Each structure stands twice: as C-alpha cells, then as structure tokens.
Length: 419
Image (cartoon, rainbow, N blue to C red):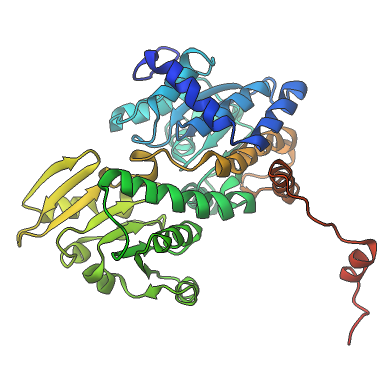
C-alpha cells in the first residue's frame, strides 16, 4: 500500500477549508500546538492513530505533528470518515492517512495494519480496534510501544477487560474518563450531533414523538436533554437502578425495554453493550419506527435478527433502510446501525472536541515523559492535565473565576472547626 489511501485527492482543498473552520473553535488545542512547536515534546516518536477522520481530528493530528511526532492515521469506523479531510491530511499536511468513507470490512482492517506497519511507539485509539489488532495479530510490535491513549467509553471497557485478563502489554490513559472530556464531549457533543444525524437522515419532526433513549450515561443524558428540548416525549430505558432513578428525577419516563418498544417512534441506543435492541423489541415496535445507534459499534442493534425477521428491505433515503415485517409494519434502520452522528452528520461540534483532543495531546506528552514509571494498565487522566484544560478553555471563553483565599484553604485542610 502507498503512503496513503483516500477516496479522492482532489478533495484536499475543500478539506483544508473545513479544517480551518473547525480550528477557529479549538483555541485550547491551538495554544497547545503553539507550545508543542516550540518544545517538540513528541520528537522521535511514531504515533499510530485510529480515530474518526474528521476536521477536529485533523487539528489534533496537526498538533501532534507540530510536537515532533511522525503521525499515521486510519479510521476508527467505516462510515465516519470525511473524505475531503482525509485527502488534505494525506496530500498536503504530510500525515499518511488510510481512510475512505464507506470502506468495507476488509479495507477497514487493512488500513489498521497499514498504520501498524509503521511500527508506532505511541498509539491513539477510539474504540480500541488498533490496540486489539496490535495485541492479537501484530504482537511482534508490542515491545517498542511506550504507551497509548483511548478516546471513547467502548474502548475503555475493552482495555479494562484486557487489563483484568493480564493481556494489556503497555500503559494506556483513558482520555474518555477526564471530566473535561466526558462531561462535555459525551453530554453536549453527543446530544447535539446525534440529533443532527437523525434529522439529516430522516427530516422527521421530533416534537410530539416518543423518543426512546437506551442508556443514561453521559451520552444518554445529553441526547435526552436535546430531544426533550425539541419537544419529544423522552422515554429512558436502563439496567442500572441509580441511573434509572436519575432519569426519573430529571423528568423522563423510565420503563423496561419491551414496554418502551411498544410506544416509541424513534429509538437510539448509547450503551456500549451488545444487542440492546433485538428481536423481541422489533416484534412489537410500531409501524414507521426509526432505529439508530450513537454508541461506538453497531453491535448495539441486533441487525442479523432484524434481517432474519423481515420479508423485504430497501434503501428509501441515504442512510435509511426500510425493513418490512411479515405483518406489514415498516422499521427504519439508520446508517447501518453505526454511529448516526458521524455517519449521517459531522460528529461533535469543534468547541467540545477542543477539550477532548487537548486531553489526547497532553496525555501523549505525559506518556512520553512518564512511561518508564507506569505499569501495564489503564490510567486516569492526571488531574493536573484535566484542570489545565478547563482553565485554558475558560480563558479562551473570556471567563474568570475566583480562587480560594489562604484562610479558606486552611479551613478546608483542618478538622478542628465545628459547630
């Protein structure tokens, strides 16, 4: 394979404009890039990244390259690539990129291997596919890897499973778990971009419809909030009693999956688990129900069961496939069950990815600096990095906050004062 594999190199200039548009909303990452260019904290490192190839990711790659890293990028989902962005990175930014929107299964994994062929010393993953292939099929490369980072909830779940089984060969920082990532990216980013993807795919009115949100983590909270804001009647389904109670107290209906399946007009899952919507739910969903996923993998919807139950299917709009059931009901699956916010829309707004990717950049620097003292396990983002990013973001927004007085600091550190 050549030093890149993209759909059309002629799209590069369009990609450049889109990357610049996103960069204007990413002041924190811009400040980090300026420092990286001066200090070169990643000099001598080869970074293998498996991320959604979007305008925001492009700005992250440019920041890492400015820091001295030799960067190689592939897609972390077959439908999330923005082809013009991939073209610009590959042909004008000097970042070998292997990503084509709509690539098949074989091409997807060939692209991952193309990145691993560069023998990375750092990995940056979104869903842990690259790390998994590295630990199964490319184990000869493991000893040279200093460490890595992981962007998403699904990937962190996989990596912690690897750690529990003693399979993880190098330290990885769970960027997803930083407060400046999941409280903003997952909640505000996923909430807005998922609604954007559903509307672009369907052009359906949300007001007055029963909107079923499966999973009330940070992503589910964000989606429920945005759907309700557009007038939908939000129903939450959960398996965690604490999150279910929280959803109830936030004003949403909470019920079992099967009950919700009978009532919903639009169904979206954001759990990181498998077969959240499955045969027994498809059997009772109303005619015209829309089904989609905003979790990382399309495993959240039991698509083989939907295929087996239907008597016919047809694509009625881009990213919308109609499945007709034996009784005549029609169910609509969006974006092949893949990430609707990236497959049908553009993903999260740049202003929230600014903080997420600032975490990625600073954690890559942390890994280069501290890898020798770290064990083979999943680490939290250091609090100093999390706080630094929040401070930079506030400053960029022109927001000033107070600090504790010496008296207040002493009071909080003492135990003597009482009633």
